[in-house]
Image (cartoon, rainbow, N blue to C red):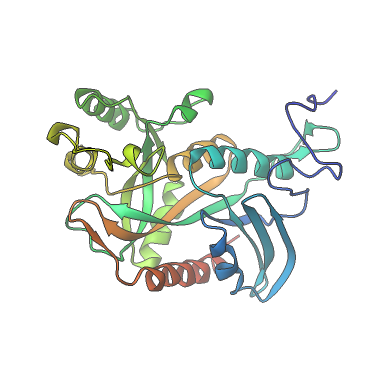
Length: 292
């Protein structure tokens, strides 16, 4: 007997509840973006499109570039949406949805996030492209899933640092390190450690309702952290959840960011759209030429 209908909620056509997708709708290689408008910017590179579905803020397009099938999917913002997207992608890939039961053989997906982010190091130039090697977060989402931390020494040192700053204990996760390093090398991009915030304003240190005490300045706290040669490079809202759940489900996960702001110097890019387009075109070209 399969899992009951309140655990896996489906539409009448057996599509998953939030994404509206069915088995066979997605390609093994998936680009995720936060902004739904960015889906068509990426789909503009497709030679052919075989599927376009939209439900709520989730838009999915599946097509081919130079014979390689790719899906692009908007996740919306925040780790709560990543929770929905990663679970439902796994359902349409690795479950028999009509029976609500897992398949005997699992398929591993390749997921690449293309997003925007802000640097928290003064020496990182605006409009740089960064590939995340690791990501950390204090978001409580991670407490509800088995953990997949690989670097215990880094986790222990970082936790002690956060607790000393009166911050919650962080959760830490790795990307697919080999593929991330290869992608960064081929892009000529930076490799970094990403802080995934649970919101955009106060959780990223923005205070519109009053001054921040110097010792509570989150940007400075994150900027100052060092563990050997490791430092925290940038801040955004999805990568840690993507790394955690993607690896938990056995999928390959990577995250690429266009750095449009520098939170330490207070600068914002004057050519944001150009930088985003450069990131998209460069990554798409590399992905279609990667070995299967």
